[in-house]
Image (cartoon, rainbow, N blue to C red; front, side, top):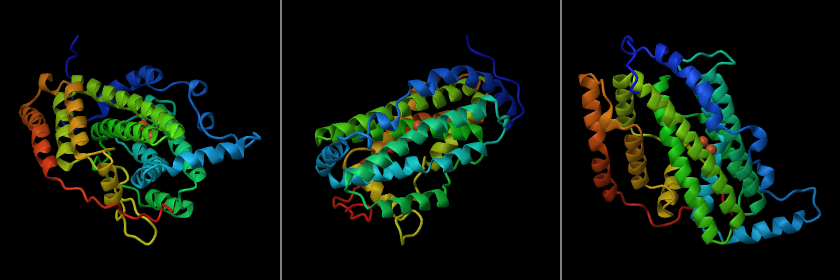
Length: 330
Ligand SMILES: [Fe+2]
Ligand SMILES: [Fe+2]
């Protein structure tokens, strides 16, 4: 049954977020699994207590040798992005109009989500350390820089913009981890393929959760959610690691090279950006949202036309063919 829009003053989210809170609590178990049932990095990595440890590390390094240079760069950038989790957690804690009660739905969700994400960086970091291909000090400096530099993702403290952003981002990370997994498999690194596969599956679940929050918000505050979606897309969704840098560089100086490597490998491209937008438009049934005010209708028009416009722009993007030399990689 279609729910009736709540009668809320324009720009006020509090009532909507209070309405969403029990939903978050109830649905959480569907999107986040109990800790004991989840995979842990130790399930995939050589166990240093076993006598076969060094042999296993040697095997790991043998397979890692065959990975393309650009792939190692992308993997490092992905790992740094995952390791910058403290930034995202503190950002989500700043969102307005949500109940900051420790046992409330919002706080529980943020903590549980962070705990899940934390494994991604853990797993990839240990793999990279063992692989023998990475200058760990350079990589670690970039991680420290990224957490220190933070980001500006254009959402402000608005819960709608934040959920729209995270919906987009979780789909994007699902795509990129999945593609890295595929390329690793082709290059003969089955372990890395498996690792990125399980991470991708987590991201898909997270995407579903954030998308469901927005779906629910659309039923009660359609115009404001539509305007928030339009605004985020006008600003363009930036990657959480957009300020990525290596030592001795300025904020964001490395990001473009990392992104070029991802485009060259077809791990994440401008067309993927459009596909994610299309997926969100379809999932949130943007064409069918009812109860929109005039501004909301205009925002919908903009959004419905946007994928075609972006496809035309994507055709014109030229990616440098030459691999960039990163300090991270030996
Ligand atoms: Fe992640
Ligand atoms: Fe995620």
